[in-house]
Amino acid sequence: MAQVLEFKLPDLGEGLTEAEIVRWLVSVGDVVAVDQPVVEVETAKAMVEVPCPYGGVVTARYGEEGTELPVGAPLLTVAVGASEPADASGPASAPTVTTAATPQAAAPAPAAAPAPGPTPARASASASDEASGNVLVGYGTGAPAARRRRVRRAPLSASPAAPALVREPVNGAAGPVPVVSPLVRRLAREHGLDLRDLTGTGRDGLILRCDVEQAIHQGATQARAAVSAPAPAMAPAPAPSPAPAPAAASPSARPGVTRVPLRGVRGAVADKLTRSRHEIPDATCWVDADATELLAARRAMNAAGGAKISLLAVFARICTAALARHPELNSTVDPAAREIVRLPEVHLGFAAQTDRGLVVPVVRDAHARSAESLSAEFARLTEAGRSGTLTPGELTGGTFTLNNYGVFGVDGSTPIINYPEAAMLGIGRIVPKPWVHEGELAVRQVVQLSLTFDHRVCDGGTAGGFLRYVADCVEQPAVLLRTL
Image 1 (cartoon, rainbow, N blue to C red):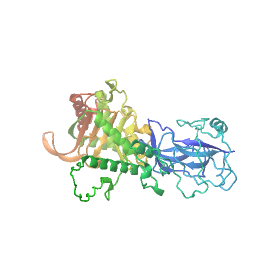
Image 2 (image 1 turned 120 degrees about the horizontal axis):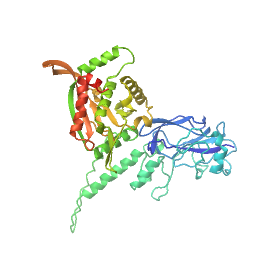
Image 3 (image 1 turned 90 degrees about the vertical axis):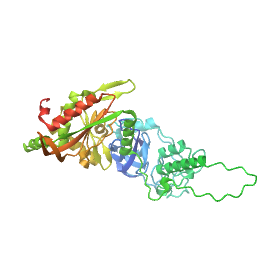
């Protein structure tokens, strides 16, 4: 007899606590194999496909595409030991499952009372042959099935077209509430909202996070208006007051206003930049440098044959040499211990703009790589960023960041440090400008370099020395050869 196992959103690592469903890869009734990807989710760090550790027939899915689920919330249920979808017209009853959100499954047909299901331990023992050998956090070969609580079936007279949504009372009031996401319910509870008073803008009246946020905003606006309204004057026979003017519409209620949720990669970037500005006392210094000789040296290297070397790789090679001379900038601050932690390896991050937003992939052990190796790794990570296949490990652990904003056609910038690093080197566009070269005015290829640094790890003298060395290598590439 098939046994229904519940697969929950696993811990995807790197401290992630939630993920957004981007695309379902299976449907209810599909037969899945062990370790087959079943859903594509977007975390705060990357887009990942989640494999199911069980093999069998999918009996239920949880959450629409676009729904955010916390780690540990149910993703789907699998009937282990079944080779084909259960016949709704047969005598066997549909399996009973438990979720924090009602599954997207077909309405059950009339059936006899269900027989008691196996205990979690017994289900795990009987399905051990169907479990994955690949360990997801919280799953693994022979892992006990998650404990489930049973929910009542819908009455047989219920309309089969009714949306499969969680219907739970809020604030102690009874009545159905069309809401799926546990995050939406939590947000409503925290702000004292009764979800039954809201009109959902989702499919079939589904209440979305934006509906709750708009209600919170409107409530705050009305509260401010009530506080600021003058108290009515006392009079023995008050005259009828004119009808109050209609309240101004909230910004989100005006036509044409668009609300974009800060979640996924964009939300993670926002959180990191905000924390950087709040915690790091940063300062910026910059210098213009004549890059004519550097461009000529790169052309000569590429003309010699072999793999092409990118300009970013040349700057990265200069940067790692500068960090070897000024290791204070390859560090982080431990505020709890009030210590500066200097790091022995240079894991070089570089800002890359993608359709999903700004990402900062990390080149591991950049200090030990040649310009050719750096160029190849930059190309690989950039392509992975554009295709959305960067792993969380490729987006974390950087110790210093390069930001080539010259590709956007701008000369300079004061970037925000990529927390918890201590510095970022910015590279502007290289453009022909009038320049005094060897005592004469000439047209040279000039670039602006800027260094934003954490003033806790060093003073201006160290930061200026780092930036001056980088500029010297740009103007005279032979300077770099003396340090190799």
